[in-house]
Length: 376
Image 1: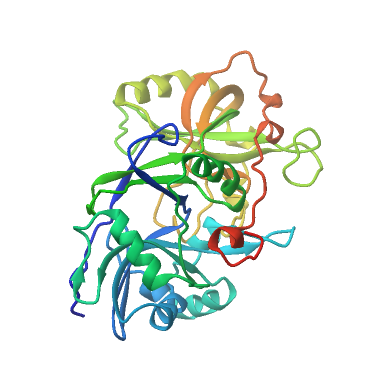
Image 2: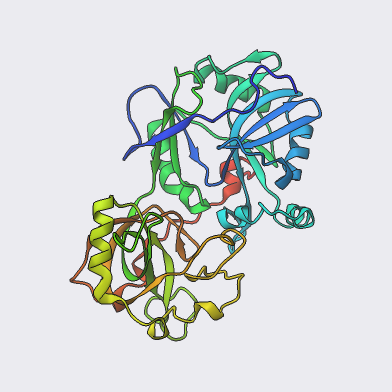
């Protein structure tokens, strides 16, 4: 492989802002919820590389084949790998957990999943084309060239949509979440491509929820002399009054963790939680050791191929305290990312914390975003 921009390359990054910027000469595009991926193609040689420069090609053979079929002979692109799955209303939605399953050590499993849950690749920046390095040019020029050479792609490789219309970007921020997208990215039209620099802006969905604290894990630096909290395990009730599982008795479902604290706060929280420590046998999640390893609800303590070498044991806490957290969005029945501790809610009863409080985004078909649906 001999390209003007050669791997390894760390992609350009984004910093968070609270709202869609209305000034500054920006181009806006959907924020895809997948694996960041740089594509390097030189004839029959194709490399897919992750955000951390790790190779992805062996896990996504269908994308390697699509790159050879759909893209120019010599090109370097920045984009995202994703998996879309059908929805009950006949549309499609991004499914990050299904995408995660695609990274598997067994070649036979990789081949099987490539057929059963094929991935797509959406391009959103140009680093090189032919013998030319495009990273020093402004994004407005890079985008125009992308439209020239990639216009009309209909999958599994796509070109992301963009707009300079602030009102339309704000509409995308609201409506595209229904297809599983993560928010909106803003790029300065006059900026060069800056690897590993936070040149872009990201506007992500953020909401709050009242959750039950039902367990904790020690921090990796915790010692007997100075115990430190690593994460709080969070739960929501389902069942007839807050149904997430189809009815039956109310059960406390594990929905994620809150984990970002200063060292001082980790020590304080560990001490603060001690009065709630209980016998696991008396805890709603106390039977986790008897659960199957392949656990779709990711009950605390169960292992998977993602955590085979990690100690996932937890300290059981009586589910008596309520915490308000900030979160961006749900992935199935769980928070997609780590939830952020906001404040204790002594005014809330744990039993009142259920799925009914969560905002449900309006459904939107991914095909309309990718441009493969005539309704767009």
